[in-house]
Length: 179
Length: 353
Image (cartoon, rainbow over all chains, first blue to last red; front, side, top):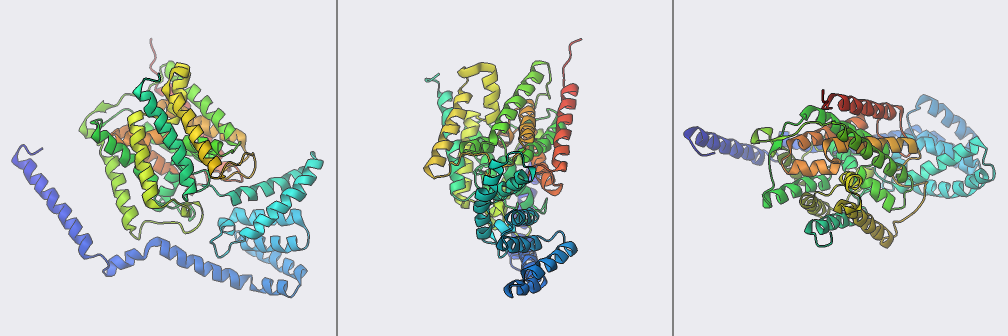
């Protein structure tokens, strides 16, 4: 590959271009445009995520106030309105699940949590500011005992089987894995 | 067989692949996904901005290690050969469908056995599917289905894939702003970079020397029975992975609530069936394609590029299965994959007049 003048010139030019590339990268590292690029998609996404968490807090703040005041029925009605307005937002389903569980409606609570986690997996992440991992863990234990027991006693009951599938889905999401 | 050096190389490769596969999950990778070429391809495609699932974006060092370890080993032992030209474009498409099949099952053949070794009984359907797919592929080969032979020559660009993965290594270490790293989800779970990279490089080198791969082992077992060393490699893989999982309290036998698994067994069977079938036709599973690409095989390199594209598509188009099951898009993509393989069997078949 060093046989003639053409090869030698080509190798020399290649070396010059690589050196120039390294020089451009080295000298512009940390400068204006470089810094802007260095802000990075991950940082931009983190900022958008934080903004979303704040928006959720504002949007669902009135519901939280109703819950704190012990007015669960009215909170549920308000949540249903919000779920109709924002069907792709998981937070409403999670809050509804929490209220239903508190009211003792285990099957409905499982269904609501399952819908919420399907829409947004952040709720099973321990590090997420939206995390409800401990609540979901408790729900799964309760669901396996309660719904699992009833499903075993009534093997032909389709609605119980569907509820059990939802509990198992939540259990799978808690277990983690790559998906 | 016990006096054969190759036998012990294969067994060692199986032991390390199974052991490190389980250990990488202990060190931080997602549960049962210590090594999963398809999941890691989806992660890497996301890190390069090829899809926007914020939970699946990370430049997995293991993949970089596989290719660079294989390349280093091939160079060291004078086995690096630039070669290619054996039906390159169909191989690229095959790479896409390999990832589709894996995404439907949620895992590549290595993860299939790692899931099984952790007690995930839903993986049984995948094992049966993989064996059936390998059998179907072998039936095709026996009847003259042949995707074409590569020819040697630097013009095929054999070093390009190792060079690309070297660039990915630079990106991983420098972390420029255009590379995306998930803050949440499974991609945010990862073993420390030096451990992941070292394990990947070691496994890449061992797999290059031994030619060990999961689907290749099943294929060889069909052809040679118990006489093939590859079968003992799989046994060693399973033994090491089960031992590591038991030792670290990660062996949880059961059908429900398994990490990264779903209850749609028919689709798990079909997903791995497609992977097995394609793997036999193109000469190796996703892991083996990375190793061959590291050795200078440009055809395998195109499969790797196809897998990267597939990793992006399965996330962007909602093809990848989740714990909830397989989506309609996923079912349609899998059936399209079977249609493509069947068509390839018709077009690639060498017929005698």
